[in-house]
Amino acid sequence: MNAGVTPQGADVVILGGGLAGLTLALQLRQQDAALRITVIERHRHPVREAAFKVGESTVEIGAHYLSSVLGLREHLDTEQLRKFGFRFFFSDGRSDIDRCTEIGVSRILPVSSWQIDRGRFENFLGERVRAAGIEFIDGAVVRGFDLGAGSEAHRVRFERDGQSHEMQSRWLIDAAGRAGLIKRKLDLAQPNAHDVNAVWWRVDGHIDPNDWSDDAGWRARCTPPDRWRSTNHMCGPGYWFWLIPLASGAHSLGIVCDASMHPLETMNTHAKAMAWLREHQPRVAAALDEPQHAVQDFMFLRHFSYGCKQVFSRERWALTGEAGVFLDPFYSPGSDFIALSNTYICDLIARDRAGTAFAPFASLYEQLYFSFYENTLTLYQDQYPLFGDVQVMPVKVIWDYTFYWALLAPLYFTQRQCDLNMLGRLRNEFTQASALNRAMQRLLRAWGEHNRAQGGPPLQDDGRMLDQYAIGWFYELNRALTDELDDEAFASRVRGNIACMQALAVEILERARAKHPAIDGTELDALFDTTSPVPAPLLTADWYAQAIAETAL
Image 1: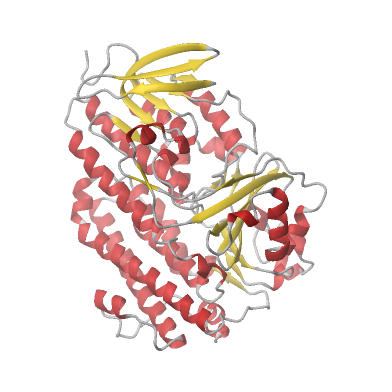
Image 2: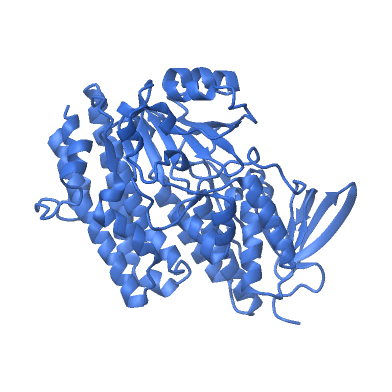
């Protein structure tokens, strides 16, 4: 008998056959053709398209995981929608969208991402896992389970079609989403300091922002002129509203807001949400009132962001996806963290199958995973008041993208997230970058507070577009994600990216102090020399002139 193989039942039982569970099953099968895998899912397949689950927008790590690591690119290209990047409009209370500041790309960036109809995709994944010889038990309800101690097998009890079943497994994975089966049993739930709520719904038909303007020049600013394929963010103080198109012909919509600034009780029915939109995003509301956009569903979620005390165990269980941690849908990191956790779980199971000690790696990988979670959380915590700041938010978006593409994305694209030697070698660099990001988030928050104390920056009303595609180094950060790098080249790339972050930080601090001389930049000053002039500013001329200089207070 091979090391790590249970004599009866399965080697791995995955509780939950949604995005996290099904992709994990496929990744495990790619890794080990002999592995006995069972997925237990409560929904009966095929599931409904469009109005099934949110989490439809992908970004670079999650998209790379699905397309390249799992090899699903053909489905994504033919059955889902290629995404036209993120797009932001500062349009609170405005109907004249073409006169509002827009942040986005005028052309599609090199690294692909997609808008995913979750129902269509999970149906496809279900067929794929069965074709791979994985036991996929849909329409089943988990009634209980016992976690084995030491070398004992885990035991799972479930019911399907009125019949009770029990099976055992060496590994037990909780991919049951917010139900968090292992999390509940072991009391692993952990709150975080990010109090936000969301409501969402889907409607028939696609919604195209280009239909909201007769200005031919404005409509043609993007090539192709397909703003509707973006994840469109309509922003205002304390909130953002998403528009995500789905390949099934529907559109996904949602309001995400700071609980203290926009109480959930003001939007927790469809009628209330529409009334809220008529006040805050009247052009969107007018579009949704058109008869072709029939409502398909409506849901809301209070306090959706949370942490977890433990996700990987030496006792051969793990949590992945929303069963573990969940951050915020802004910047769409959900599938990224599925990619990260699934890859760590696959590595732990491979070590166990090989008969090697995996327990120390469970602890190390958990520390890394929580570090990625905590660093990403800083992008959101106490930052929602900035979302309506047309002066600071464009700078924050550029910074947040840079932080993501400079460190975590290259680490995953080059499949080095489990390379402890490389992570050890670059430990000081990653620590430095983390401190730099935390300091920058505090600076951005302070800048916004100074703006609000003076009544806020004036709204720009000339329809300017802050084109991210035109920023050469920014474009290159995205393109370079697909470079194949040996260890020396990777280490050099990370150091170069951090140098770019430092230069950008100096420049942002200089701009913030120019607007508010009293702003406190001592934290950044302490990290590195911010007094030397920047020889070649990264965001020069047109971009800063439009984003900053022309919004002088």
